[in-house]
Length: 182
Image (cartoon, rainbow, N blue to C red; front, side, top):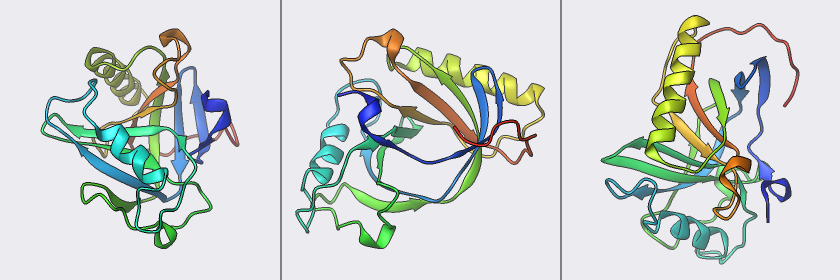
């Protein structure tokens, strides 16, 4: 299974500049779970809790299609992992989680500066990618409104050089439109 077989969170590209983009995202419904402190990059059960939810581990025993990306955000002491729900599924339609550490919520619509990069998921790569994005945002005079969110699109057995990863930061910046859709 590769990312080609999964629905991805929708967005509209307002501007592209090499590996960087400015995108508008609609409100997204997600299921999320906490990631234990210092657990980023290690198997900590977060993915399996969310995977359990979409494979019927909810009060309705409803199966829900896997989507991309898997989102990770927060600090070492307050990190979360989230799965985006399919676009056709509204927040009120998502079944209640059976696991008390999984919750359903809606992420507000927003404009984000995004850097796409490849490689395995690790803290060093995340720090480097965020620094590149922040440097580009400063050059482009885009304001930084949120902590970073990391999006991972591929299964762990995908070779690192083929993986699609992204770091995104909400911005207030207007963007010249040079591309209609992704």
